[in-house]
Image (cartoon, rainbow, N blue to C red):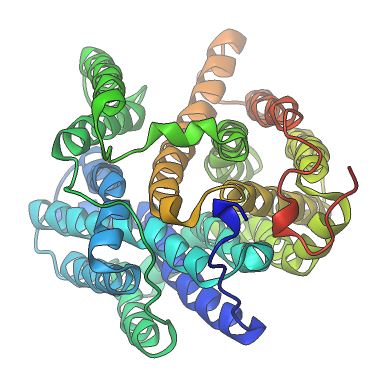
Length: 476
């Protein structure tokens, strides 16, 4: 019997749903917060009497804190227990939300956002680890469909919800909505999630590795957040990229000698993990651009109101929800390799169809396209997120979730940069002072091509890849 097949838990369907829903709600709170805040930035700037451009530091500080502390999450979970760390991360995130809501000035807000980022850094990878440790491999697909939804729903629901809150109440309630969710989540973890402990990484925390990886993530994220936005001189942005690249190389040399590296790069020797990370990163870069591009095109290009735009884009979230019932049968019937290849192609085509949108299209037709795109996109995420752990030995699960989440966070941020860069390049080549409809179309085609690049990488998987994760393995 192989390492990947030993000591498999066998949770009941009811327990799987309970654990998955609790983890998914906590992650939805985090994903929603990440997007809902951006809508409230102008109101915050007015309240603090500062230039709206400076308010971006409240977003950047959160993302940098998130990126710096994610690499430590696996070791912390192994050291103190995944349930305990997950519960504390929810409490820390909720406390950060409270401090954000009562912040008297920008400095306090930034400090509170850093506290939120620390909680969020532990919440995503440890929540995923907690779920993976509670189910057998054949139950992973069903469980992981729940974790796909927060990442897809948050960017869709965040902007319209933030606009509604700011319109009818104060921007401080943008953070206040996290409090009841956080309190209920912490209680639910204590009552319904078992304290599943497994052998993980031993030894001391890799301090030097954490410093190198933290510097790399912080500098690369800072470079991406400031690129082309005029917030800092271009030379500073380039220095951030150069420093981040140097820190990456320093970490790589360090990890080759470390006994217990904070990010275990040897996991890339596992084919299913390697393909999921590389092909999945291309897919996430493309998907990360959509919440940036689509509302801009609908509002600035088509003249839709934020509410009208939100109603149309919500169709993608509805498609993601509908996918839940189809994920397990699809992967059981066709296998991971075929789904990742061909569903990836279909998803890229669905993304490209948004380039054909025009003001003459009826909203119901645009919604139908986005519904289909959300459906196939969610299936692709579920397949990537599950196959990554198909051949990982259980003692290495914490290391795998840490590395996977670190790359995932970087990829999604790169998506916003790609979307903005595609729009900017097309505008300049076309001689437009501001993006025109043709520029949005060019940007959608560009991100769709990026998504399409993942399918050839998925073709490298064996035909039996992930068969332990399905109930009916595909034939040879």
